[in-house]
Length: 229
Length: 237
Image (cartoon, rainbow over all chains, first blue to last red; front, top):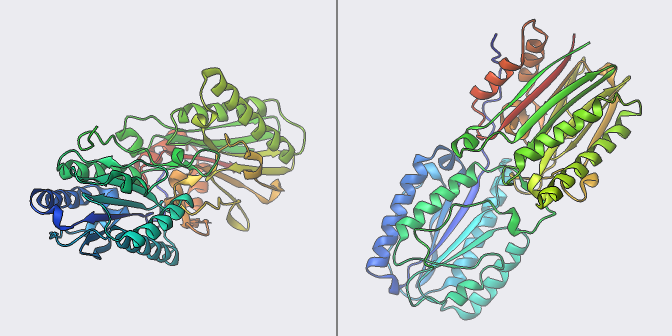
């Protein structure tokens, strides 16, 4: 005897917003920028190919090279398209952080208005240098740390190349130490990111309190393959 | 008389990662006591399956004693005992209690009173002449994947409890969060999706309906989550 009840078919999926803040300053010229573009193209493909990630992950790309700008506003994984990035100018990382936080906050407001459930957003900062917008950077770090402490965002700092100021990246989070990218292994990084979004998209049940903030993070795949030791 | 059927199955995301089922369920009919339990071990915790199993087994043991006190008083003691039992188990293994984190819902009928207690994002719906109602839906925090667990040191403050006259109820449904998308009409308001509960109550009353049919349904329904799924239904016959 079989049981085939009517079930609700059109409840909306929960969302996970992921903002990628990418350093496109002039020092990224040549092979780093080529690998970054190739890695992001691969990432778009992998996000499309994973059913849950395609529906649930929303990606935004913000670049900082000369100026901070929103290259790709928050876009559902299934609609994400690669966009070749060009290097130029200096490294206004602080302005990019502000822009990233603004985008995330606006997106959360839209989720609430639409009655969508969502997970804690992710914010990645990838840089090969150091911030050139001193006071803006200092203020942006303060803002970012406050949002992180209020559990408003999970922050990941990724250092690229030998000139990167890891201690500046280290200021971005009180919970996670920045990771140094092995060479220009952007493809491996982006592949890890799509797998991480996949596990986040199918994640369930984390404690609301009674444990440290770090303990409540979604368990992610190992970054071995792109992280320098 | 009550007829009870139910089951739990591992979700597709758990199967893909070679994890078993972190959900557990069971029920007891002893004298005039009817007690239904579902638990969902926290997917992010290493001992989640043991946590949910032990929680359900602990409730079973206590329900077999055929409690005579008011059902809400009994439930409060039972939630406390589950918390202590998980604590003892964790201590015995030298592990943090949080590794055994689980959500827990219990519906107990003692005499002419029905009490329902829940910690975490379980779903309990009751049906009667007035239609179907979700009991104390979990008001989760900002994020969809966060909830409360019975292992919390302050579990008592997180316990949601409702008592109602048993005569107003002729069907009781318990589920873990894995089925939310399919059985709630509105996730925010946690309104029951009535066609599902109508169909389920009717099926449960049909001769020959059994646990295996519930498990087959749970294995085949596209739940949008890949999470473990559990359903227990009790109907008056």
